[in-house]
Structures are given as structure tokens and as C-alpha cells.
Length: 225
Image (cartoon, rainbow, N blue to C red; front, side, top):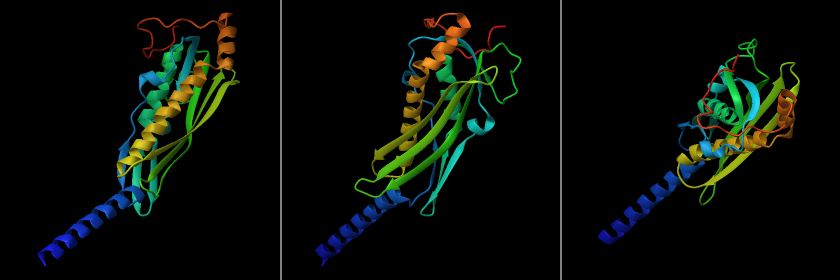
């Protein structure tokens, strides 16, 4: 009898653990996930464009939060700080002078050559049941650059999809972090290799050569007057 009870206890415990894993992976628990800025080594640094850039990082972008409600579970993804900081760092690494403003009108009278306007187009996260479950995250991010006459110089829409296999509710945060990391890795490459930006930089300085990166360059600062 004792052996039977012992076996029953093991079965019950195993069943509860199994149910917990399924719930964790398939929407049984909510959570809040703070997404971090991307690592510096995801940004190409082959040289800087000799262009004074004004980046418009609006409050709605820097405070952007994605809320997902599935199977009765609410998950909150805090993305804004990561998006704004990563965008700022990316352009600071690629251009000689960068000025950050919070709206379209701020800094219009400053000595800048181009304005960068990033925005989130769409975000989604879901999980597909399995052993282990597949966590899937999608983030679509648009980045445009216009000259002082509002003519488009550069426009890219990055659609980043990421899949993470694993158990537990942490998978939701992991897959979104991976999506953001890869998003800025791709955007950094698009900027660094852009023929449109290269031509624009050449039209300003009379040459299409990129300036070498100097030690100590890359701090956020306003354009030189």
C-alpha cells in the first residue's frame, strides 16, 4: 500500500510539473519584461560619415511599451528606452556630429545636414505549443533620413522575426531581446553600407570618402556652430 501511495505521489508531482511547464510556455502566466539596449559590437564601425545629423527621438518612441494579452495572461514589454538608446548609439557611431531632439521642431535652426526619424511600425509576440514550445517575436522598425528640404535620403523598414525554443515564461522576454538585438545589427549594417547616405555625404563635402574613426569620438554632442 505504501508503495502504491508513493507511486501515486510521484505521478501527481510529475503531472503538476508538466502542467506548470505547459502553462509557462503557452500563456498561463503574465509578466513584465524590460528590454535592454543593444551591445556596441552589433553596430558596424568602418568609419564615420561627415554629416551633421539631427535625430528626432519622440516621447512616444522612448516610452514605447507593447502589451500582449493571450489566453488570459497579460505581458508588458518595455521597449522604448532600448529603442531610443540603441538608435542614438548607432548614429553616434556612424556620423561625425549627432544632435538628439524630442520633436520635429526642436533644433530646426541648428547647423545640421539631415534629420533622422525612427518609428515602430508593429510588434507582436506569441508562442506555439511544442516540446519545447516555440516563442516567436516580430518587431518592424522604420528609419528615415531627410535633408533640410525634407527630401528623402535614406529609408529602411526592418522586419525582424525571431524564434526561441525553450520552457518557462522567461522565453517571452528572451525572444524579444533577441529580436531587438538583431534589428539594430541589421539597421547598423544598412546605414554603414548605404549608397544613398554615401552620395549625400559626398555632395556636402565634395567627396564620397568616409572619415576614419578617431579615438574619443562618438560622444553625444550638438553639431558645431
